[in-house]
Image (cartoon, rainbow, N blue to C red; front, top):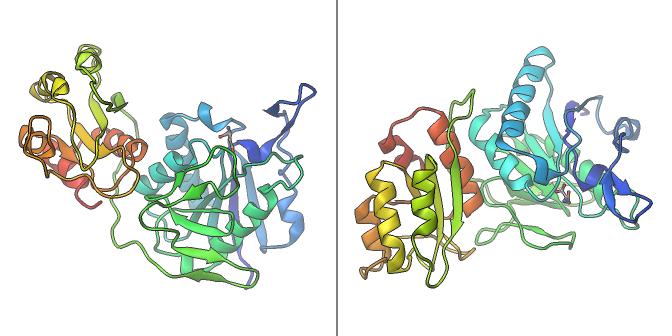
Length: 324
Ligand code: ASP
């Protein structure tokens, strides 16, 4: 059965071409626009050219705008699924933002491309077609926001860009894709168990993401507190530890009631309060650091920003990270 789909373009390599200098750049016109409808994959494709931005130019404000555009458009014009084309650099952040803020009854799928529209072996049209097939599939409902590239279906929560240029860049470390796209079918073999959601209609607060390294001192943490940051995400070491020289800065943030969320800089596994030495996870936990189990730093940052923007209590913020 064919369906009605909403196709929203936001830019990225998928809609870029090579200029006279040989550099990949967005043109005035998105080459995909109007082309997908001609393939007859759905009864109707409602196409919206929302932004034409490289994804390093996408901010949380654009993500909120996108969420509102989807909600508003679906109220005016019901559809069976939503497909969003997006640059791959920050695609995972937009996908997780939408996952945390939308409550769609229909599938919402993000896709992109590693090769520009005019490059040999361009993966853009193939990925859009796969995303349309996934968004049209009844099995895609209730799985949260999905990311489809290179014939794989990933959850917004776990997917990350792992390679600078390879078309198989999107992976879900630790968990793998939840399904695959073949010539004839959409096959699911996993389903996410839990999702978190926030009611947000405007964004407030600045949240920084800092990577922890051997010998790191507290200077940036003191600076963050002085500069008025409202939340900090730390990509800590191993199972969730930091050098002792970071403790004074952490204590300052926590005394100022600035929430500190800890993830691991290891991309597999879960940060947990295991070690009892100075700067070890147990000490961090006792001081009030929130452990974001299994999220990447960039996803935890989006979540902390949304949690702060939703006006929930500090206890509820900490609770919201427990599901991962
Ligand atoms: N730099 C590009 C972007 O994110 C990469 C891509 O789309 O693949 O806009």
